[in-house]
Image 1 (cartoon, rainbow, N blue to C red):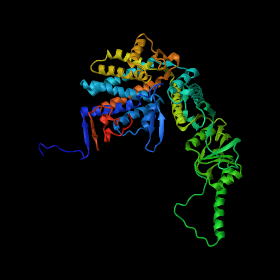
Image 2: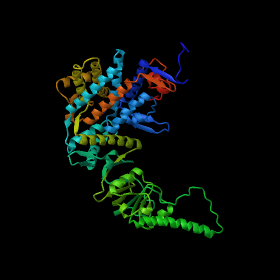
Image 3: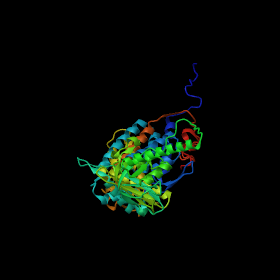
Image 4: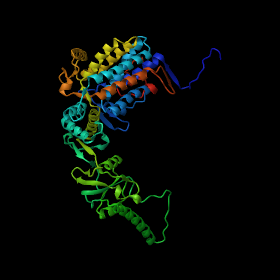
Length: 553
């Protein structure tokens, strides 16, 4: 075997090493970042995403775009995870986090071309990320959780540029009221926001300005029988997650009858069993029943006879929320159900809207519903995404208690401080810290580009303002002027900025540390290796690890 290569990989396996692997990974990550960059800011554009089933989503929410895109490139998927983490931890800032990650990798590629080892770049990025988060802490402003005016500005900033923008003042007030309704103050003085007690319902056919905040729950269902009452003031409510119908036999069974009376006896027996089930509901004292599963037609008739209002096939999420609103237990077995399982409150019906309004009573009952209205399904879906982000950032602001100006102000300030910090860093890590600072400025540059402004002139003006000590100097994308964004009401939670920097740095470092890609299938990279090919992946790679992102650019 002397002099012959030893083959250890499968016949279809392919391998990419060192410089080629790094270029491949960086190009894929940058392709993802650039696909969502145009959505950033109040002047950002929307994306239309069409699934393989023909479902259409129109949005400029970064994490929604990345989740809906058909991405199977493993490196690109890492960048998608940055957006998902940002959404889970901060609720907003997903596009910013992805844009920073992409720019970090772009700048890292320049350093790699200068023969700087990835380990040195990673160390520099870690130093810079730590310093950047400390700088954000330093420039943040403490906020009183009771300062509703500031919280509304936070909500409005989050919704600006999204589907909720047209009615952002009304929605911001509703959002702040909703967060206050589910906020509790702990014994040590901290404020805890539990959004589990806040439910969002949507309804088409009305204007977004008709959205409202309601005490209790809203159930978009009809009574199962027209003879049932539609409103019960002092209601005892049972919640069930099992069906009220006869159980099917586990095996196929055949019934032989000799005369019609035997068949009638069989039918009478079935009817009696259903009647017994309804009587068990009545025995608990319930006069309203919300069932997650089906209710047999005959059982519906008996429930109506007994004056019990019943709803079938309620959503599981609605049942879980009603449990909190009414202080009830979810019944799975009627034989063991008792009065103690019931919740208490009032149930009313809006026939015009086709909705049940359920309010709880007593100390154990709590919960509010945000009812969002829009003219079409696409409008109301985008409205819901914008409102959900705003709820998350307002909740984070109340919990964390810190805000800072938007419009690219924190990124320019932190970048300036990082450049000063880099002067004291020894070795090649200094270049990585400076590259990190440059990467942060992708946010104001992109805001300017998306607003049709000159990004270079804008960045020069912003840097000059920050050198003069204007920490909150940011870009007003509507006028093109540099102004104090904290004073003008463009306010963002500090937590979202810290999380964006942390997630972006960790993802970039993860990609940079890879120097060898071994694929079980095709790893073809046709083209000249430049990113931005027609498939959106490096060099327009047709398949395997290089493909799967077609049509996203």
